[in-house]
Image 1: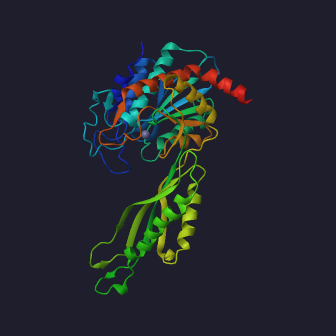
Image 2 (image 1 turned 120 degrees about the horizontal axis):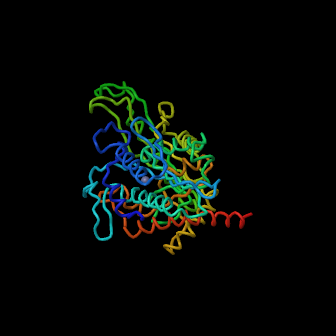
Image 3 (image 1 turned 180 degrees about the vertical axis):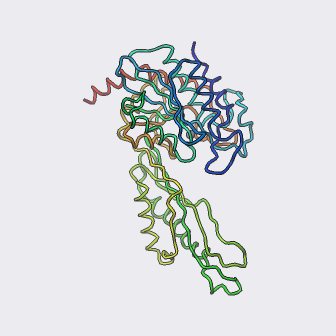
Length: 405
Ligand SMILES: [Zn+2]
């Protein structure tokens, strides 16, 4: 008996697993614990091998697998995050999991519980139908994708430590995100940091006794805007991801209108295209700033600790991408390889040498929105493709290997 992927997606959407996004927010809807519990019960009911992997207290990855045949078999990893973004401002019941007019509505429907249901359904079918030859199929449901990728980082330890089912690193990894069933081979990364101007406080009846940090930030802001427009947007676009960019998202400073502010802080978001590293991007910008006459470098400080997410680079993942695309086109003929602007767990996993692509039903345009939804047709197609890929994986990769060898 096969799993009804729509019903399963509804069950997943109905379970809150909100990422507190680095804030001290508590409540029954926060963190992934209920989701992990549900998945554990599901795997137990299905009779599929599984274990939990702690990432931090109360937040655990859960990994399930069906051994390949014949052994030793390559490992195909399906990776999907359990968490969602918060639900503030939503105009639909976030966990209502309502189905109407061919869509499933709710937080996480597109990002990324729809694809999770599709991957779980592929796991269940592999378990019950036992196609042969087949890879060892591992479905890893990780925590904390939306705020720092720590679940995926911890997951990589499993093959670095050779923990079963990873007697070696996976041969291929499909990372779940809503890509409209296109096969994503490259995506942008991001570097976020705080930029602080230090001034000197004084009473504003005699402002020259102080040094106004907000005034001093003004030329920095203008220089950053110029750098985005005149440097980054003039670079040749990356084939899949377009041009790099820079934006300032937060500004804070000052304590009272009659006090010269001694501090002004901004938070900068720099999007990296494949081929760029965070360090290069930062060095380049700092050099640019130091050439601006009106920027006071002496009182300008950069705190680099906010966030770094690498881009996903095309290259080692292309044979995998072509194989998945071939299967994808059996179900939805007009799909193609693609690049996207958002970051994913794939860059983390790819860094360990595992070829990774990003794939899933639903659109990123509906992710994180006030009325998030996923198309049921795409959800069913996604499940079909992900199971067929398991069925055909050994043949396709053997053919790919002999064609390229
Ligand atoms: Zn996501």
